[in-house]
Length: 157
Image (cartoon, rainbow, N blue to C red):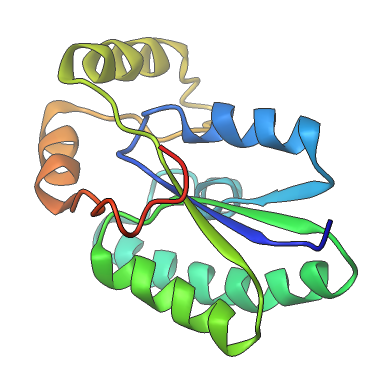
């Protein structure tokens, strides 16, 4: 089976990383995560620089993914693809390189989403964060920014 790119689309803390790990078990795949890199390098101290550094990290990972794909490894991009523009940018990048690209959308109902956020927040160790703490303002910001993908965009729901 030729390698492909799987874009994981979903709100913050909806289960994307857990889902990515399940896919990885069944395929020869590598998970590339902006959050993993950014938290390892900067903890949660980016403030207003977060978006700029996130964009730079994503562009770096797009390029790095090509190396993995060229040696036959499927790549799972675990960073949400919250906007139609970000999804279009990713698909165009991989189309340019003639690489198959799928969008897997993790839709989640509000009560379950709130529960996952609360569970994650309770487990976060401020000394060694492996995930972002999602307070109410951040949850609302994420909700406001998220653009649900159209059925035509989604490969797997």
